[in-house]
Length: 135
Image (cartoon, rainbow, N blue to C red; front, side):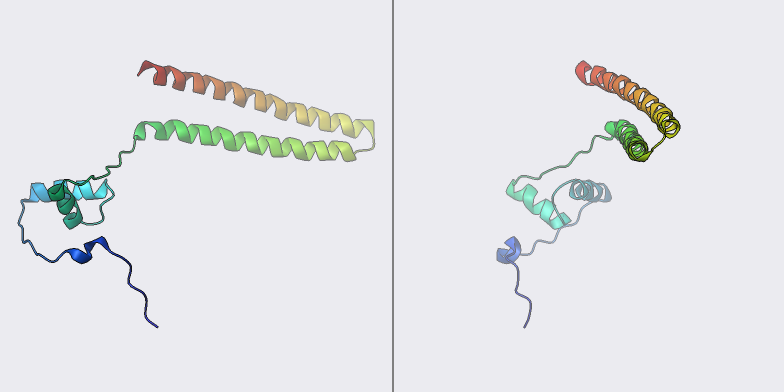
């Protein structure tokens, strides 16, 4: 059993147009194809001729670096939270007061790390807010 043909919008295209363009025009069409929802250059040309919409995608690369910093802080906070959970389990399972104080001191070190990471996060967010509110 063969594969069923998909409904293609190009089924009713019957006339052939031969066209030559300059290298510069070809690069412009290729750039439109790469940054839009068009799959081929002929599709770009058809949409231009028929005055159809071409959805052009634009990526704002200015937010790449701040997003990487935020993701890094998120991962560090998650790791610290996992460590605190492990220490809490050990604390609840300890019998002697000495072991409990040891686990409490270890947890306090991690809570200080959380405090520094959260203050770093808040300062970073305030810088981003100033940048966004200027526009």
